[in-house]
Image (tube, rainbow, N blue to C red; front, top):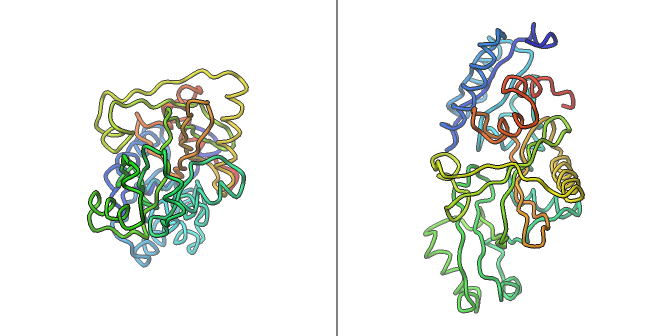
Length: 317
């Protein structure tokens, strides 16, 4: 037990009301149990609905020194609950409401990265697809359709295209409708497919933790590959120093350019030319015993409990 945390009242927020509720509960319980077993003064809290009055009432009756928000998805990662906590004047670790809102929306994230000169695949809001953009798709074999705001790869599809698909806007849009059905085009965007290997880099209090390479036999690292497929492989690659330094700087810049603080995870691809392609940022990654951040922290030399303690002692909020 760390002396600077010994007297603190800690509350773990988990569950929530998004479609990632069950994964969030597993993360939250894992952290709660680790802290409880280590002798910390910790409580577990699950808000099942988006009701500020209930949240306010809970914290009026349960005082805390540190809140650790592990609510995944909408409500937890998009700045909603952070706004509530700010309104109540409560201290929590992780990114603030503005940074959470920005990083949860993949389009806003990519726009900020581009503004800061950071590398990310070309994209377009689905409802803004025009003839000019379609012309840019010639000689492109695949594109990816993604929801702007979701986690755990929910709703992502890789689409193989040919020139007959992109003759004009109507033909292209009809192809998308045939695949997705009745969706809100305002909530999705197109991203050019990167033919390469996928990696993730956890960030912890200004430190870049070891990079993990993700390999799956599935079409991509989707929900099942993340949570159900035992054949998904995670390894720690060795890069030439110049490339490693570039990865570290790019991922840390990607994290900080969004205003994120404390901890998080940056996902990226390396293409055939070993060029970095930033994909997204997860401001509240999974924290089960087999999740990627704990896996990387273990490689760095932190136990699961030490990782949690380092998150809880975040200074830059």
